[in-house]
Image (cartoon, rainbow, N blue to C red; front, side, top):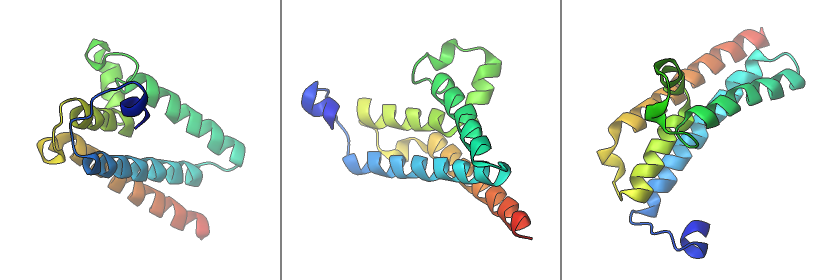
Amino acid sequence: MVGWWLFDVPFSSNLVSLYVAACLFIAATLMLGLLISTVAMTQFQAVQLGFFTMLPSILLSGFMFPFDGMPAAAQAIAQVLPLTHFVDLVRGIALRGAPLSSMPAPLLKLSAFLVITLILAARRFRKRLD
């Protein structure tokens, strides 16, 4: 909204689509945080693991550097991170005005990440309670 209001950046899509994509990304990232908290033994370890996943997410998502210019190994790592798929969704929604239904691949990958991390975190959490 600040970009639209302050810099006059055009937004040619439905704002609800952007909110749905953002909610899916937030849920996937929260599940990653939950998984990290089940792996870490201390709060310091959890913070360090959070930074360990956040920095590669930002650098490899295509947000700062062009995704196509990265080596194949970096692209493979980036495909596992949720921010990569959220950046694809935001670019499609905000820049091209595409509806969510026209971008099934990033939606499915983000949803799969959410479900897989939820299952892994639930299993790890159950083992820690025993």
